[in-house]
Length: 132
Image (spheres, rainbow, N blue to C red):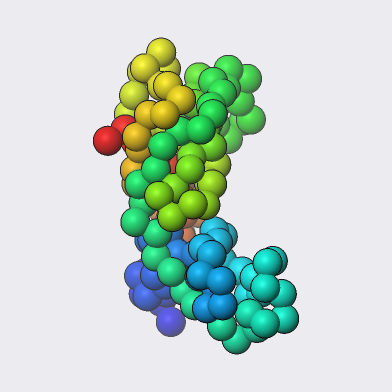
C-alpha cells in the first residue's frame, strides 16, 4: 500500500477518535481496549467514538525554553483542554497572541503538520487547538 493511501485510509490520523464504553458510556481519549471503571465487563464493548473537537482551556503554560524540534515555534502555549465529551487533552494553543489565552477560553481542534520524513516521505500531522 502506498504511503499516501495508508494515511488517507486511517481515520484516526485525521480525527480525534477515542472509545466509548458500552457498559457505563464513558468516553476515553486516547482509545482504550478496556474501561478502567467497568474492567472485565467492558471487554468487547468498547466502541470507537469521534470527539466533536470543541472544548475549553482548563489550565495552560507558556513555553519559553523549547526542545530543539520546537525551537522555531517558541514561545508557545501548551494547555489542558476539557473536551465537551468530558475527556481532557493536552495540546498546543495556536493562532492566538500569548496574552489572549485564558482559562475558560473556548477552543476547537485542528490538524496541523508536525513534521515530515523528507521530501518524498510521510508527513506527520497532529492535533492542536485554536480559539473559537
